[in-house]
Structure formats: structure tokens, C-alpha cells
Length: 339
Image: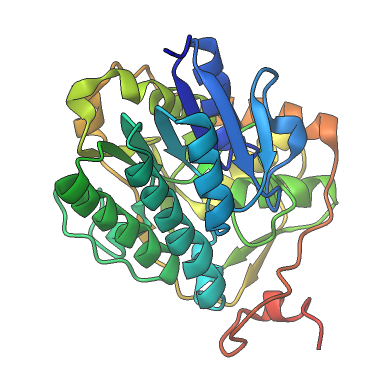
């Protein structure tokens, strides 16, 4: 019996990127199943019309059962714990979730034999300290366990295509921000951290001198493109950088965020941590394959997010209690851990 609509699995679909991908797919007529463990996302993010399953991609029996039940046509794999700096200190957790969980999904997709395309959100962390702007032709050389895990999954998708014919598309987004983001995570998403600190009346904390450079990507410029990619056959077996083009120092970002939040700029510089100094990508390739609209300027994107954040109020910053290595852990993170 033929299914009336193609069925898509969206992992991490309660997170703000995954939820926006799921919402786009529903609007395009797909049946959507969202799988999320709610460790970083929220049930309120899951769009109406999607079937929600609470669970962990590390649970291979659950993953296998879902593929058997639904015969997914498409997989959008967005579930990850994307904390590059923290990943040095949670290696076991990082590889279990970001690598082995991904392998569970790839195994299930291969065994199901129904998947027309496996869409994976990787990261520009795979480039490491390569000289920016990073292009897809550069040889990946990740410098943190998070980037290593992402690159390993990319390689696994390539060999799974060669061995089993599993079609795939890889996206490498960077510094995505916007409405529905979890602003209570103290380890990742600098814009969310700054906005939460604004609401809590705290200074913005910046590691080092703040002259690190990044480009920031508004959610509306990223999620719809990922969702629509499966309808572009020429994009299959390709890898794309996706995100914003304008480059800012973290200091400049702090000024822009304070302006959007309507608060005086107050900054506390912390000891520098080990991180890539300059990381931003070239997006020439993605524009050759997709109709990419003009990016939302940072100021406008920050204003949209600030309006949403103001409606939801401050959040208590999370504490990742299962740190595996405390040696060289940044002092501000170490201070909140139980003895």
C-alpha cells in the first residue's frame, strides 16, 4: 500500500533548528516524526502536526523500531550536543551522542532500505583552524572532539553510500541563532548566553580579548534551506557550508546584542580558552545548487530574537554535571560544578 505522503524523521526536532526544519517539512506536505530526548530542546518547540517521540538516538533498539514502524523516506539528523569548547572535557559523552548515535541512525537507514536521502547537519568545526573563509574543498582538520565526531559521521555517510547506496546531503552550518533557542545553556550559543545575561542583569562574559571572529546565521536563513534540500536531486552526495556571511568579532557581537536588548554594554573578560581564533565560511557552493535568499542582517535577526526572548524571560544557566575531565576546564565552568 502506497503511503499518501512521504514520511520524514527529524532527530533533535524539539531543538530550535530541528523544530524549524520540521515546521517547513509539514508545510510542504510531508508527514513528520520528531525524535528528541528533550535534553536541550523543549516540547513547546515541536510544531503542531508532527508526531513526537521522546527518546535518545543512542538507544539503537528504539531507533530500529521507529524505522521498522514508519519506513522513513527521509532522515533529517539534527540531534547533537554542539558544545565545541566543552567537548574536550566530555569526550565519552560527546562520542556516544554525536558519533555513535549517528551510527545507529545510519545503520537503521541502511537496513530499512526505504530512505531516499539522509540529511546530516555537520558543522564548520570540521575545518579546525583552517584559514578562513572555509570552503568545502578544504581538507577537514578538526581540533576538538565535537568536530572530530562530526567529520567521522560525514565519512561514514560517504562509505555507506559507496557500500549500500544510501543517498545523503551534508550541511555545515555555523553559529545559528534565533527564536526558540535555548538561552539557558551556559556552554554554547554565545548570542543566547549574552541575551540571558541581559535579562539577568549580568555582564556579558567573553573568553579572552574578544577579538575572535565569527559569522552568525539567523535560523530563517538556514532551516528552510535544509528542509527543501531533498527536493534538489543535484545536491545529493554533496556537502555545503550554510549560514551568514558578515564577519564580526565577539566584542562587536556584544555591542550589537546589547543594543538589541536595550541594555548598557557591560563586559567581563575571562581567561582565554583553547578555541579556533577565526572561523567563518564561504557560501559560493550552496548558492550554485539552491535559490538562497538574501541573508537577514545581524541587527534585524538579533531584534527578532530579542523580542522573543523578552516574552519568555530569563533562564537559570544549565550545569553539565557529568564532566569527565576537570583538568584545564575553564574556571567559570569549574566553579559551578559540585565538588
